[in-house]
Length: 366
Image (cartoon, rainbow, N blue to C red):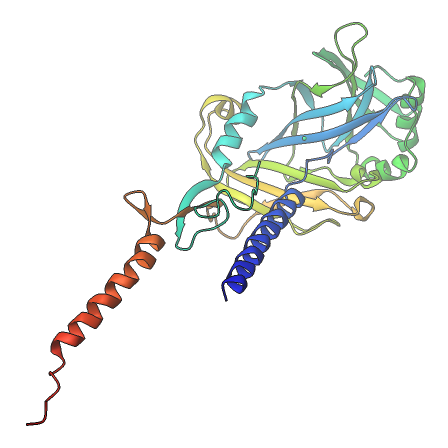
């Protein structure tokens, strides 16, 4: 009998460890690193660049849209080009990186504690038994069909604002500046040309001689007139690996995409009003906004069939994620389960004693 109990305890501890490992593995799958989700990144064919994370903040007051984006890259390339289609004439400038930190703090999940009764792996008496370890995002063009409406040097960026009447003209611009046009990109640019959109073409060039693009780059802010809130995504369909999109959307109301545009169902991870303070207040011009934070995966980027258009939700329902921190139920630092289990023999003894006192003494024969 004792051997069976020990075997059962060993199996229970093994199952606990396996479940903990599975939880950690699943957690790593549902928290992917953000990838480039709104433009085309082009690099010299002899160099490599990987966009580990792109975080974007979109602000819209019903007339003007602002997109603030920041790249974190790993690269051996001394320079690269990036193209962003926009529905109107855009201004481009360096942005305040503090806006990301402020919004991350606002949208952070709240932690709440819930208690459990029976001990788990890591609790006494299992704390030294199974050895389980704790849970430890340009230059001008000479080809016909492209017009340069502005050019600025901003930190590590050489920015050209372009118009184009022919999608192949952007390919000529890239070729003229030493970059190879990704296959099929001209086809994806054609809908923007047909709609009369313009482009922000950015050459990423580190300021220091001999430096390469690596780490977190300075954030850029694009501003343009728009009577709809749109987030360009079509060019990302040429990506060869799964993509993830993370958006902080600031608007008058809670916002939601009209559709999935070929990705998974967008998930709202935060919704609520934010005060116009600090970097957020400077971005919104001191106006109060409703913040909606969206996450969306694109397991097969080739299925992306358009741009995100975001519209007001039916209601401004607030939402904030809750992270539950499990804690063993104790009284005065002593586990309640131990008090209960340890007290059972005492209770049983008391009950038995009381019954014996109340039971009449057996009658003896005369």
